[in-house]
Length: 98
Image 1 (cartoon, rainbow, N blue to C red):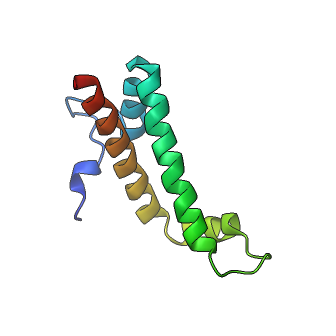
Image 2: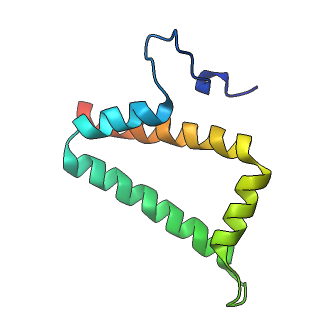
C-alpha cells in the first residue's frame, strides 16, 4: 500500500487518528488561521463540484454521485480523507510557525 504512513497505530508516539489530531491542532491554533484554511478547503470543494457538474442537466445531483462513489470506494475515500486531514493540519501548523 502506497500510503502506509496513514495507518493508525495505537502504539504510535502520536496516538490518535488523523482526524483527531487535526481537531487537536485546530482547537489550539489561532482562530483566524483555522478559518482561513477552512475557507481554502471550501473553495477547493466548490471548484470540484462545479467541475463535476459542468455540462450536466439540471436533474444532475452531485450529492447522489458522491454518495454512490463513497459506497463503491469506501477504503479509497477513507484513505484520501486521512490524507486531507494530515494536509490541513500541516497547513495550519506551518502558518503557526511563520
